[in-house]
Image 1 (cartoon, rainbow, N blue to C red):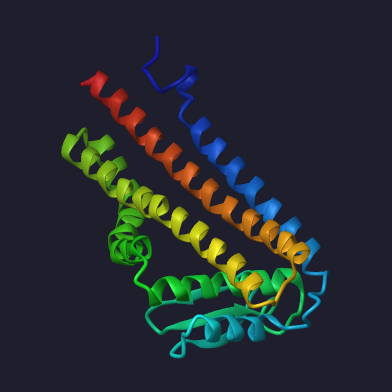
Image 2: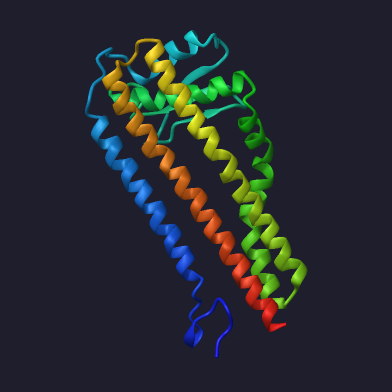
Length: 236
C-alpha cells in the first residue's frame, strides 16, 4: 500500500511533474536557439545594426531618456527600468541580422511599455522582491514543514512559491505585448519589410515560448507541492 502522490519502493511519482517541466523548458530553449541561429545569418535589407534599429525605434516613439548599451553574453538582452537602459548582447548590438534587429526591437518594446506606464509591467516590477523571496525560500520552508510535520510551514512554502508562479503569469503578457509593439515599430519605421518582419516574428515567437514553458514548469512545480502536501495531510 502506498500514499497518494508516491509510488512503490519509495519512488516519488510527483517527480514526473518535474521531468515534464524540464522537457518543456529544454524543448523551448532548443527551438529558440535553432530559430535564432537561422535568422542571425540573414542580413536585414536596411543594413541597420541592432543598436541602430533600437535607436531609431526609441526616437520614433518619442523616447529620449533611454540609453542603449552593449553587454556581454549571448541572448542576455534586457531592458532595465531602474536605469532606463536597453542592454543588447554581442550577438545583437553590432549585428545586422533579422534576429538582431528583432530582439533589439523587443527590448525597445519594454522601454515603450515603461514610458506609457503599461500596467502589467508595473505590476511585474512591483512583485519582483516578493517573487524572488518566494522562489528562494519556498522549497526549504516547505520541506522543513514536511520533515517536522508542521502544517503552517507547509502552507507557507506553498504560498511563497505561488508568488513565483504569479510573477511568471504576469511576465507572459508583458513579453508578448513587447514583441507585438516591436513588430509594429519595425514595420512602421521601415526598418524591416513585410517578408523580413515574418522572420523577426518567428524569432520573437520562439523567445515567447520560453516564457510559456517557464510558466508551465512553475505551475507543475506548484501542483507537485500541493500533491505532496495532500499526501502528508492524509498521513496525519
